[in-house]
Length: 193
Image 1 (cartoon, one colour):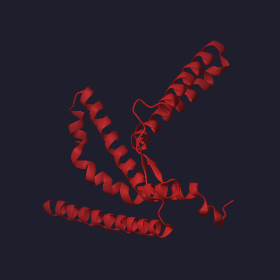
Image 2 (cartoon, helix red, strand yellow):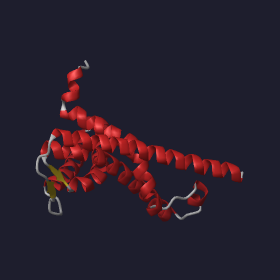
Image 3 (spheres, helix red, strand yellow):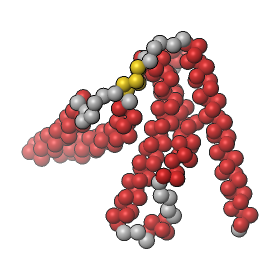
Image 4 (cartoon, rainbow, N blue to C red):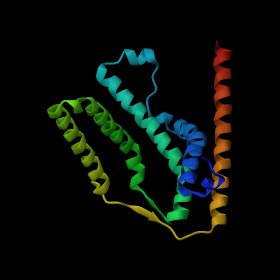
């Protein structure tokens, strides 16, 4: 059920670029963000109190989420600007937290399913799931902050092609640079041993 013309579909192009962005740019964003987030060994984490462990876990999730968000947005933004001539800036924030909120809604739904055989428990759980889902959808429709959107003038397809080519080449160079840094660090570590 694959067809070569699917490559012309915007949904395919955005999915492809998002995946390419993760493969090329996630390690770069991860490397850039490392100094801002504490990295401890498992032995050091085990010595911490439970609240510190939770904060370290949340810090790690934020670090990884920011790196993933940055990588995907860097890859998608040129095409989004070319096609729609705008970029919603609030999507940078939404894409950090919304997938997690949707995961909770899905968990609540799946948790409620077995209880649907018991009417009063099932209907209560489905009611809670519905209210939660409505609340997160309300946040997206009426955010607590004003929507800001970046608008640009239309630009030629050749400029998009050049921009994507430079972006991909830059990603390849960045991956190569990170691989060299890692091999130097590994070599230095082995020399110490």
